[in-house]
Image (cartoon, rainbow, N blue to C red; front, side, top):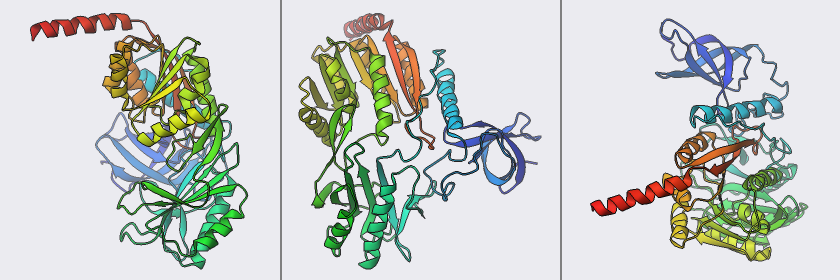
Length: 476
């Protein structure tokens, strides 16, 4: 009989998926090889009674009905009362050592299966801390008897109330309680996504870890707050609060921040230190949420790049310039490219405020910037790419190859698209020589990687490309 929704089956978890699910195989007459079943919050080695929640052609999904035998990798205390209800963490039910092993295996699997490479994957570098490591949080606010402040449930916009998060600093809870008290006392409404009514949509908090400065930003549908002075007075009593802002977002959208922000009190930015450099941070500034982990990540990237004082470094997808600027003292010139104008402005300001004079930044997408520099005749010695989860466009990879840097460092937040791009780069003459997973987001399913690539056949590729273009020109 075919597997059906709500059917309860016995299942042994034998693997873990990249998105934090356990994997088992259900065997019956219809699936003699075993139908893959994904079950969240399970661990390799668990035996469970599983209730099937969805059946598709090639797989099924389920949830734990009863844990009949626990994996040795399980921990007794997850450290969070809403784990499994909140959509933030995937791996709180296992030891951190096991989580790192799962992430190592995921990166290795993608490299072998998708990229078809046998380059050794180095042992994963863990985070300096697996708790209270985040320096930024954005809490949705929903209406209730009291303001509901917390995080969204998995695959929904239903707010799970939770003001104490093990991934955030304890002071964030103090700030949330202070804002909630003001909302209750002044009868401030929370935003309703269905009716698009209500004032407060999100509470955004950012901490500059090194300086201790805190930014509190209320994302609201109006700039007119009831009794704003009372809110400011209460927040100012919290040690470290240096910036209290309101961000206006009146749009019917899932995007958290609007375009306009104004101060209620204090500074419009906070300042933090990363890799020995100072960075001013606004609500819209990109900045790694795990600062100490980022220093490890950027240090590895610089080591892989084998930088020399005569090098020209091209930093694509540069954001606010943190990676390129952290390497500027070790090279002749840094050129960064980023498509977001505000990020480019931040990068230029960050260079100026740190007295870095050998860096310039272009406002363009990675492919356009690379093509522009190619037209200038620029031949970078090293290229660093840190693309979004979708990876690099093929045009970017081809342009990099034509520019023929001797070293390419690829920083990735998605092992699958990384593996795809490594396969493409191999065809363009770049060989992955070092692959280093780095855990920047403990207790979540995300994992970063740093890859060093060297040019082997790039010169041949350039000659072939030029010859092909000449033939095409003659044919036309």
